[in-house]
Image (cartoon, rainbow, N blue to C red; front, side):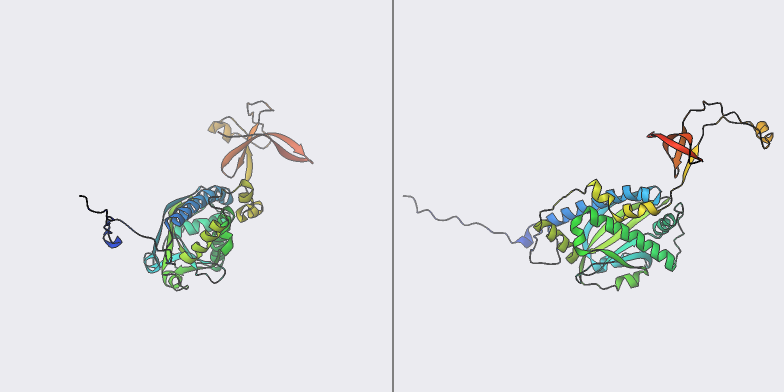
Amino acid sequence: MRSPLRPQSRRITHPSVVPDTQLYDFRQAAQLSPDQVRMLTHQAASLAAVVSRTLQAYLDADVSFDLKSLETVGYEQYVGALPEVMVAGIIAFHAGLPPGIWEVPIPVAFAAIDCMLGGRGNAIPEDMRDLTPVQAAVLSRFLNDILSTWAVAWSDLSVISPHIERVVTSNAVAAATGRVDSQTIHMRLSVKIAAAEGVMNVALPITAMQRVLREGHLEGRHGAVPSRERIAKAPLGKHAPRFPCGVRVVLRAPKLTLRRLLSLHPGDLIDLQCPADEPFVMIVGDHDKFAATPGVSRGLVAARIEKPLTG
C-alpha cells in the first residue's frame, strides 16, 4: 500500500553562499541595474564616436575618442586615483543633483587649448602648476561643447542640463566640490588630440544617471540613434562657422634645378609644363580637399571647385 502523496520539500540555498552571484536590490539608490549599466555604456560609446568625428573638424587636428571602461566605484576610490596636480572640469547639474568631475590629462588639455586658439595642438610638459584665466576659460568651453554635444546625441541627458561650472587644477579642490553619492560612475575615455594622448577619467554621480535613465525608460526613448540633423545642431556645429579655416591652392609644377633657381630674376617666366586648363589642388588645413580651376570673380583671382578629392 502506497503512502499518501506529500509535497516535496525544496532545499533553499541562501544567496550569500552561492558563488559568483550578485543580487540587485531595487530599493538601493546607490546601485544601477545591469540594464542601466548596459544602456549607459552604450551611450558613452556613442559619445566617443560622435565627439571623435565632430572634434576632427572643430579643432582641425587628428582626434580620436574611445571608451575604455565604465564601472561603478566608490567616490573616494575615484578621487584617490587622480594625480595631485591635475586639470578637471566640475560638471554641474540642475535640480540640486551632486556634481561630477571630468579629468583631462594635462598634455591633452593643453593640446585642446592650443587647437582652440588656432594652433596645431602643441602639448605643454606635464610639470604645469596652474592655468591662466584664458586657458581655463578655453578649456571650460571645450568640455562644455563636448557635454552639449552628448546632450544632443542623447536627448535624455538634456533633462539634467549638464555643464562645466569651473575648471580646477588640484585633486584636493576637485575632491571637495561637494560629494553626495558614496558611489559614482567612473567612465574612462582613451583620447588623442594632435600628438597628445592619454585617458580622461569622468566621474558621473549615480543619482544623476538614474534620473536620466529613468526618464528615458518612462518616455520609451531607449537606444535612440541621433540623427544627422540633431548632431549638426550641436554647439560644436553651431560654433564651427566662426572659426577660421586655412585654405590654399597648389599648382602642379616641375622640379627646378638649383642652377635654374639661382638664375631666376624678377620678370622671368617659369614654364609649369602643364595645360592651362588643368585643375589645381585646393588644400583645407593640411588635407587635399578639392580639384579646382582658376578664374576671376568680381575682379579678383578665384578658384572654382570642380570635384572633391577622396584619395
